[in-house]
View 1 (cartoon, rainbow, N blue to C red):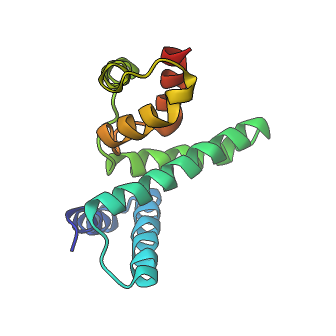
View 2 (tube, rainbow, N blue to C red):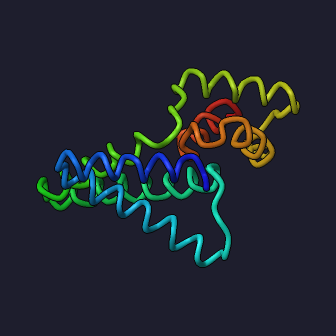
Length: 148
């Protein structure tokens, strides 16, 4: 069993004992998502695969927050933000934009990229380097800036 799944299950027990209903329901949802994917794939997920799943879930929460803000639904924004905060506890620490910029610059120099035509090559290498520690949209924005 993946370490991250064990950690989620331990945190679920703690949330049950402490009566943290919001936290408990979010963790249960995450475990349920993981188990659903494991059943579909007919195999246990690795920590890396679980992190990807959690990142997708976090991204969905962020998009929902944006939609609810546009619709002036502060009650739902608050609920989504609480869920997002819980999900982020289980994700690797995110890199700062400054660190991402440094990685992008190193990669551009490594592969000799010179224009936006090389963006795909640069993105592929950078995303391997920052795996799970940076949002793809931020990386994409920085790569565009550097290659423009």
